[in-house]
Amino acid sequence: MNINWMEEVKKREKVFLQDLQTFLRIPSVRNEQTATQEAPLGKEVYEALCYMLKRGEEEGFAVKNVDGLAGHIEMGDGEEIVGILCHVDVVPAGDGWTFDPFGATIVDGKIYARGALDDKGPTIAAFYAMKIVKELGLPLSKRVRMIIGTDEESDWQCVERYFQTEQMPTIGFAPDADFPIIYAEKGIADFDLIQQPMNKQVHDDILLSFQAGQRYNMVPDFAEAILQLTNENDMKERFLTFLRTHALEGEAHGDGDTLTLRLRGVSAHGMEPNNGVNAGIWLAKFLANETLDAQANEFVRFVSQFFYGDTRGKRLGVAHTNEELGDLTINVGVLSYTNERGGKMGLNLRYPVTNDMTRTKEIIEQVAKRHQFVLNNFSNSSPHYVAKDHPLVQTLQRVYEEQMGERASLLAIGGGTYARSLQAGVAFGPLFPNRPDVAHQKDEYMFIDDLFKATAIYAQAIYELAK
Image 1 (tube, rainbow, N blue to C red):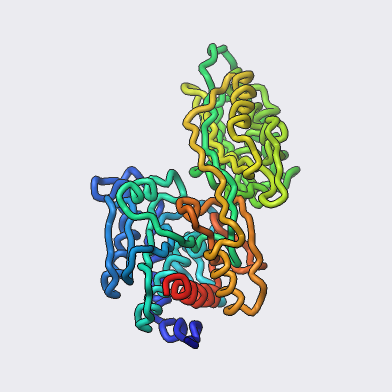
Image 2: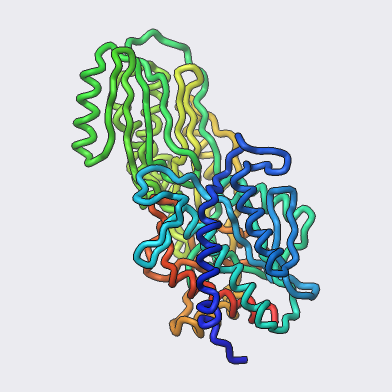
């Protein structure tokens, strides 16, 4: 059957963009402060889930809402399921945007919004791919099911709950990474390092609070420290000199009682911290050279000693690399401190399949203990791998090569996608080769033509996998 898939996408271009902009304008950041029994992760994420389920119902698909945490949109018949795993939650917008992060502004062929790339833009692309296959009336021997999650950027409660009661797809893909095909993903461990109580010592200069970051898998782009000092002007001048020396942005404000230091960095996805500028680590680096109360000194000096200029765990003694998956990486995603409770670090560690995570955890615990920190709230998702000769991989390779006219090389990444929740699942687009990865960054965008290309690829892939 000879189908011009791109032509089919272009026929639906206007309504595609309308859906895309409406969807991106929902600020679907997980927010438990607005949570209800119906919307357990907050009203905005739930609104995004309901939007997709409603659109599915309007187009004649079978839909299901699973406890407000996940849902699916399905077509076709058969015992086996081809899964398309998407998520509607996004990371916080952060600061410094040129455009409204939830405005879905189109400029010069790009659509700017938080989630344009990760993962709401690709979700719309996959939805329209299903719509095209359905409207063409193509015969399928398997069901095609888009599984929609609401917590991919945090704890994956959504897929955990979903697969407690719902059938696992036989094969599937997640449109949440790079083209051509991601066949291997690093393991991902999230955990806290929590400072233990220390004997309070009287000191003239006190760190009252320190805060940076909102998500473990984001490089913090803003940090703030509030201090009580005997001479705020001296520290203010040293801080401003520090900013100039290191070409950083920030400011210092004193009111006679306290001095507030603010430093701005550059956000990036936590899978490669070197793509960003960690505002929290830089602010800790500055404060590590100051003389503060003992508890504060231990906190900022620990951060500076083990994480300033080192995202590979070398100073912790856990560095590891692998030819296919690359280096172990550590992102310090959240830093918090108060004079009353001490400090806490939220870390996102990504590691190759050859790394012994049990031993890595033991080493970090030993280092932390020497500095009066404990490791807590540990979670781990093991590395994911699908054989290169698996029929899923070979089919997607062929589809990509037919659509793009170029070789579909197989990739391994540090990112983690919903594909790892399937026994036979890979990440498949939407980011094309040589396009910058702006996920989790300010001014996140997607080329509209790239979304159309991805839709055509997904449509053919759905048909080839399910026919």
